[in-house]
Image 1 (spheres, rainbow, N blue to C red):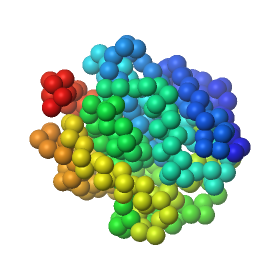
Image 2 (image 1 turned 180 degrees about the vertical axis):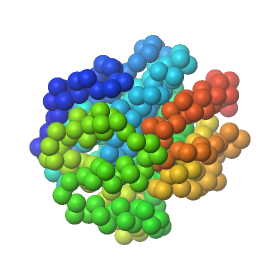
Image 3 (image 1 turned 90 degrees about the vertical axis):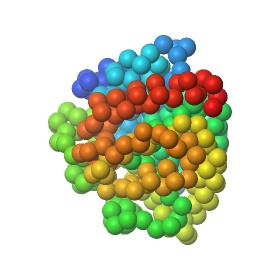
Image 4 (image 1 turned 135 degrees about the vertical axis):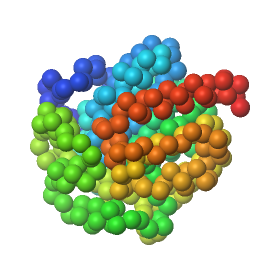
Length: 309
């Protein structure tokens, strides 16, 4: 497997993002070493908050949440999915599959030996994060899901149908279209460049983010839908605290919070919230409100988690 690595110089001078990079090298199923990037802030011995992003973003998406989360006294870790941000980028579309993404993230989790995790996940960060929770529940104390889902081949909404059809043969990622439909605020030119130009200095680096839409298992004939079905079956037994914070202007995952609340035991009795004015990339628009809700959730569930209830 041929792997591309974005030069470190591409990430210099990004606005509001002065966090030191950390790297973990795992081995892919074909033996190829893959370097996965994450931010690691706060006390090394504190319980971690793990932040997982979606497509086509990276840990930069959490830049406005990290300072507030650090005030909780916890360790804050934000990783970059393979093919995104500062993580390595396999060079061919055939290198990417749902199974491989799950394998890569699992190997990263085990290599870092994280425990007592509070997971905050959005978009693909939820799909892959749920896999980690479902298969390693002993490592997670609680989950916050925001604008994410776990497709089971039962169809989809008009936005995702349009998105998948358009991306099937796209020669490059349509940044302007994607952000116009999913963001409720205008990015500055510098912020926009931090998403597009920094991780992807040329089109050949975009292969992973071009493939992600085709890995969404919304139709029953998708070859990997069984992976999500197994994850979902395991999630139905997860009884640790599980909170949903969804934006009311997200066209991608609207209504999935109700599905999680109906079937995941840990969602019962939690202070779920629909955040007004929150689009799909809600971290860009409602960072302060998200931090407030996460902080409340941590405080409200601390005793329950400590007692193993």
